[in-house]
Image 1: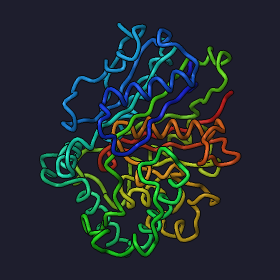
Image 2 (image 1 turned 90 degrees about the vertical axis):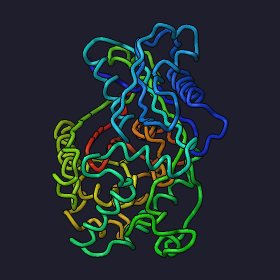
Image 3 (image 1 turned 180 degrees about the vertical axis):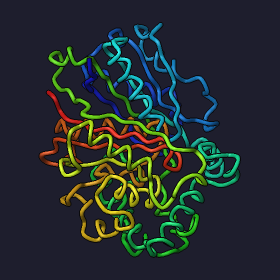
Image 4 (image 1 turned 180 degrees about the horizontal axis):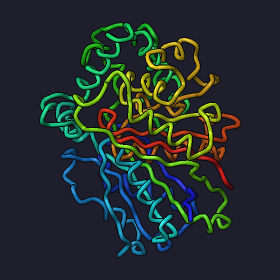
Length: 386
């Protein structure tokens, strides 16, 4: 038995003042069930992707979705956490339950409420996804600043390339009404250090960093034997997870080794090459991450990803459009929601229902969600089957 995505929901990402974690969860869940055309009583089990680590006091949030409808009472609900890949971890856990025959109709929600803390508080919470023994006191901008510095040392200064990636993703977000930041930015603004674009963790500037966002996304998945009951269905050609060592000291940080192996395995499972993909949603927590993901996914050789950006290969209309949604950089990055959001947006693309961000003729979409500094890696290949 295999799982099919038959419905989705997605709140706007951004600063959601006065909107609780529970409200975000229930808004996305209700939309997903309505889109699928399933009733709350049809749901066999629920998975919630939620990182938290002190960003909100709700440390036991899995059952918050049950308050949406009396018919959801007593439904098994489980919270899943795997750093910034918590959403994909929830998607995969739900899919595995269907494949095992333990459930036939499931609900997956990813959520994060980040803006109740100030920037320093959020930074400290996210730092919990690093290796405390060696990396204590180092923020994630500083971690990826170190990654960028090492990459620059090995392959030359890539500051202009990173600025162009930021511009691309902000341009894409202009077509996404759910994006946190729908604002056009110029190359000169992104490339120059200024009072409005300060250096955050050299060589990364503010425009190289993803946004602190609130938001939720949700999916309804069913067993493939139920596909005929739904107006749309999106299937997994592949779904591969790999984890690497947590300490950065044990890895070559001029490449995302586990990401590369995850992509390679996903292509093998799907029976495709990268040239068969129509689009990709990838984990641009920082612009350097997107650049290195190009190389991990096989678009360019190690150290040569800048050429893709210069040629426009990853822009709309290019060889492989990347982050048509605006990515984490402009769409936003509510941590636990990100992996579910990526699957929603990729499913909408291959189903031809992505609205303003739709890529004409999209048939095969790649999702790559990453937790920590390249530690937890999830790669899905999605296609419409109905």
